[in-house]
Amino acid sequence: MLADELFACGLIQVTLPAGAEHAQLDIRFDMLPSYPALLASIGTAVMPLIGDDIERLVCPSDSVALGVAVSLVTGLPLVWHTGVMGTPTQNFVGAYDIDHPTLLVRLTDSVPDKTELDTFIREAGQVGLTVVQQVALLGDKNNSAVLVDLHDAVWARVNAGKLPAALAETAIRRRRD
Image 1: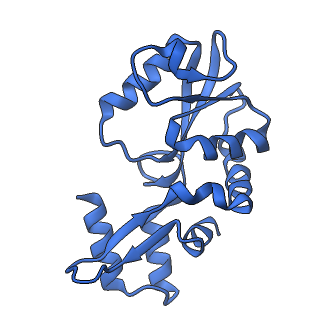
Image 2: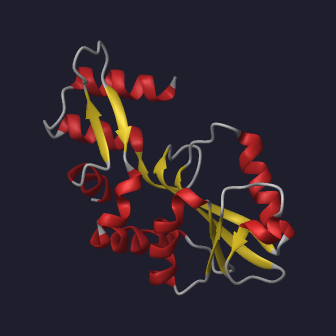
């Protein structure tokens, strides 16, 4: 199971830091490129979620490793964003022209600033990348297409006896807040 691999590699951790009153959920996707077999598994898991009309992949700068993994498995060209908004033709890097139905690939479905995501999608459209679908590695299956539902993954560890329920509960609650 993909969630188990993420926990085993330490990319998702539930910790109780010394002196802390509450558990916290640490997401360490910056380490994802260190696990090529996991990247291949993730790329393969995305394949059945991709619509038949998708011609390109696009991802933000924090999701390039994930985007490359999906690109390698699917054969779809990847365009990535530098992280600077405002000049789309300079900030989207990769091969694109006009009218490409595009899959937005992200590490998480978390959107601290909906305006930023809307701007990203609008600017992608300005360079011919029409985002028609989104997928995230981690998130809430009720909100978007995600490979790993965070809540379900944490509680599966509790049910398997790998994590105390009290830690899981506080970590999930604090993550939502």
